[in-house]
Image (tube, rainbow, N blue to C red; front, side):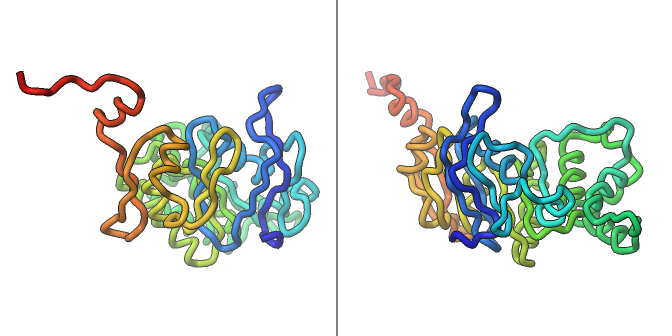
Length: 277
């Protein structure tokens, strides 16, 4: 796995004095749809930000195509790796089509300005994310779900072989969650490497070809969902007793949390006495 296009060795990641990830190694399998899961504040988004060169490691190295990612010019990284951040800041007074067009920045040159290829890439990204009808609207006037799809369109417009998505289904209703994840699956089938942070374990198991399970800044398990997702692992990582069954629609693992009484008993609480008087 040492020849993975995107990997990291001995990563320590921190915000000021708070260390979030320490001495972590990770390999992103080429051509995979990798989903990172874990409880809140376990380091999922922090890891993704470091892989995208948004967060500089305190120590350790992220590698892209065998070379330290920090050594590349920004445009070169942006032509290989697209990033949808968590809760991106919306620029004031910018229209949807203008924001999506910013995804083509890495393809611009001093002597190569806006082209028909750029126009087609932006139009295709807006069509795929169903925001074409919002083209003239200001981004800061949109709903949270609409904004999320616009940001995804900007990432798609980069047309990179590797796409990193931090909670891409945030703010989306159920129908749009599946549409975005279906789109990611289609991009993966077309040859892109997708890395996403998701909170929904069943979505993760349905769509991922590979799971990375994190807790407390460490990777506890990595592999195919059918090999990784067990009731014991879910309880160890999330503290939730459950059953792991087979999803009748997809034959992938499906996590069914225990009922309230069982969860309460597991936490040490007392279930109400239901013995007939």
